Length: 311
Ligand code: RIB
Ligand code: CA
Picture 1 (cartoon, rainbow, N blue to C red):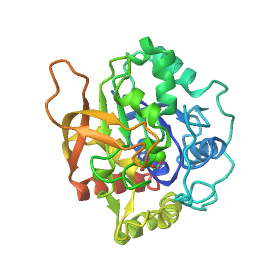
Picture 2: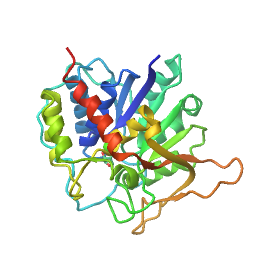
Picture 3: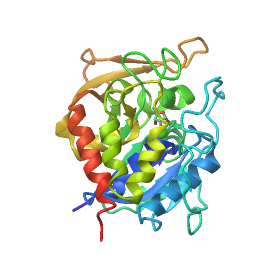
Picture 4: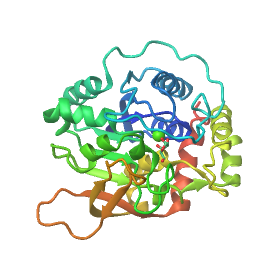
């Protein structure tokens, strides 16, 4: 029986890799996609999500748009868009068929989870604004989630600032709500930057992707420019979060309490990951602290290249 899943995302080049990985995995039954502003604005993240689904032959999957802005304070940065002005590194995808679901993301998430006959796993790979709104507006439905799997935060250094990882930095109050004070019990896995930045594609991996066919070639082209100044590898942060569900045996997790800095100083958006044993009953998040990086990359390549091998 395939696992029912949904994903909230801000495509975004690595979000594209995550969507393609889900579409390439028969173990996962994708029930819907919601989008949030982050890497680029909400109109572009929504269009990009629909275009990538159509590219993977899943134009049937409903897409609902969510928050255009963060909950409390708009983030300010001089950094250029790491994903390009269009959010997908300049690749050109056809205009997606069909229309966007008219419901706001939080409502669409709640309706889809409530209608599911089995628990749904939700991936959150952008700013956590939509998930925070889902929890605040529909706590009883959110409690029915099988698990929330978040790409975000960092045990050590950040990538948007020295202290903060982008998804949490973009909306720290939403991240606090979801990771620290959810107001509802949802088993949660956090896949932080410390692991994802070491699980990237090297030039040989990109060549395998580029040579697999049209979908792989477009994906390799998009990934080509997304280096985040990391040099040797191209990160696929969000796709690693999908692998945490597909291949948990490749990851090491530890329970932790998460503190999110929602102040207005230089460490705003940073996450303190307390791996010390929590007092009995205290809320904890399962944090991925290590992974078999090459096995994860191999599994990602196997799945995404399989899209071009379909008859
Ligand atoms: O820090 C990595 C995260 O920020 C990823 O989700 C990437 O898509 C960007 O949104
Ligand atoms: Ca993302």
